[in-house]
Amino acid sequence: MKTAVKEVMTSRVIWITKDAPYKEMAARLRENRVGAFPVLDDEGKVIGVVSEADLLTKEALAGGYDGMPGMITGVLCRKEQGKARGITAADLMTHPAVTISPDAAVEDAARLMYKSKIERLPVVDSDGHLTGIISRADVLSVFDRSAPKG
Image (cartoon, rainbow, N blue to C red; front, side, top):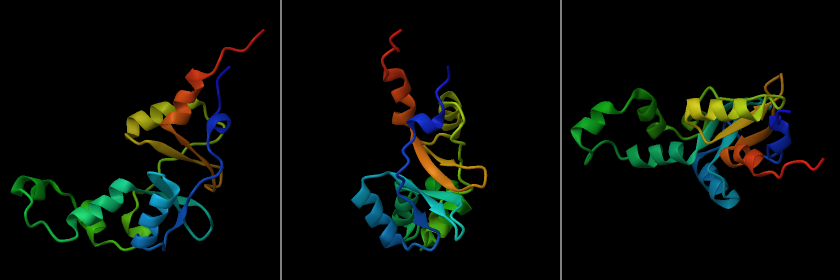
């Protein structure tokens, strides 16, 4: 029997609205000891994810590209340059969010995380509303369970 995402996901999720300012996002990441959180629109639908990496991009590039090697400057894409100027979650988030259904198999979540190179997936219902989040640790917990006694 395959394990469903809803069996291992975290249902109490720290999230942020699309209008949240940078300082609030940084504080909430630190206070809640999470590496990222989903961004919700006015209807409560997941529209993106803000991670520590997104916030660091802003800090690293906020002063411009002075002092950075020419090759690095040339490699920076417009998306990163836009994030450096961003001030809200909508500006800084990675979007569209990569999400998964609560009824999907944990193996599917693992494949999606691996393929997308992400550490967590917002879990959404059929309307795109947040129902939970599944992390790499949650996925791996399936393999740490004792075999059922029969």
